[in-house]
Structure formats: structure tokens, C-alpha cells
Amino acid sequence: MNNPRDEEYDYLFKVVLVGDSGVGKSNLLSRFTRNTFDLETKSTIGVEFATRSMMIEGKKIKATIWDTAGQERYRAITPAYYRGALGILIVYDIAKHQTFQNIDQWLKELRNHADESNISIMLVGNKTDLRHLRAVPTQEAAIYAERNHMSFIETSALDSTNVEEALRNLLTEIYKTVSTKYGVDNKPVPYGGLGTIMTNVPSTEDVKKKCCNV
Image (cartoon, rainbow, N blue to C red; front, side, top):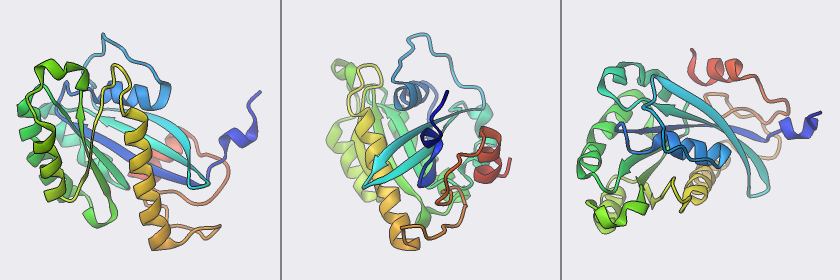
């Protein structure tokens, strides 16, 4: 029988993974939430959704993480999933320079459909296990991220390198922004995707409705 306290949280943050198809978003999601990796992962159709909780500065943060399809033919549905997001992970493949070049388009889409002033954005160079095939120098990506006011990290969903750190760093950044803007310690917080300081976690469908108006 589940312990009711396992279903408690202090804050609920919505995080969205975006980036070209094949950069490893689905396996990052599975590493974030289940600590698994699937070599046979197929391209995401539409969106997938999972949750992960962790302690950030003494608060239990529950993250609802959305993995969006990277293929152009599904791009039209993506804007709905930005709604209510407080964190965005823009992912590229360090071995495919085109996926890095396409970040400009993902940033443009983000700016068209979300309020950047309320969102923490992290640039993620995935697949560092393919270092022998590297096409995007770390320094080039770091400079790009700084120029576009994003944090930056390189990861490998395959061998787990920096995966935990990426999520923890992003959630910490969101928490600091939220606590500065709205306050903490049992003060209510607007729900626009970040939740309220409550106990019972809503169902997946409730979270979808509250986070994204779907």
C-alpha cells in the first residue's frame, strides 16, 4: 500500500523537452523519471508525459516532464504544450551539427508561444558517449547558450552522465525564480503550470488540464 506522504509535494513544476527528432529526448525522459535507457526507442508521436520528484533546498518538487515530438509534421501541436511551462530543455545531438543549428528555430517557436520572462531555459548537448563523433564543440555551445540567456550542460542518456544534474539544476533555477517572485512557506502560488503548495497530487488528467488547458 502506498504511503500517502509519497503523494505529497510542495511545488509542481511543468518542464518541456524540445529539440529535433532523434536527439535523445525520450531517453532523457526515461533516465529522468525511471533511470532506464532503451536502445530501440522509436520517435515520439505527439507527446509523452512522466513525473519525477526531488528535494530542492528543503522543498519537495514534483516535476511533470513533457517529451514533445521533434518531427516537423507534429510541430503544429507543440505550442499547446508550452502553456504553463516553467522550464524548457532544448536538446541537440553533439554528433549532429544540424540539430544544434536548428536551436534557433526552437527558440523562435518558444518566444512565439511562451512567456520567456517566466521560463528557465537550459540548452542540453546530449549523447556525449559519442565523443569520437563530436560535431559541436562544447565551447561553441556554451557561448551560444550564454548569448541567449540559457544555462548549458552536456549529457549522455546512455551512460547517465549529467542527467540527474541537468534536471536538478533546472528545477533549482525554477524554484529560485518562483520563490523570489511569489514567496515560499505555505503562501499560495498561481497555478499556471507551477502548482500550489498542497498535498495530494492530482491525477495525470488533472495535471494535463491545469498545466496545459487540454
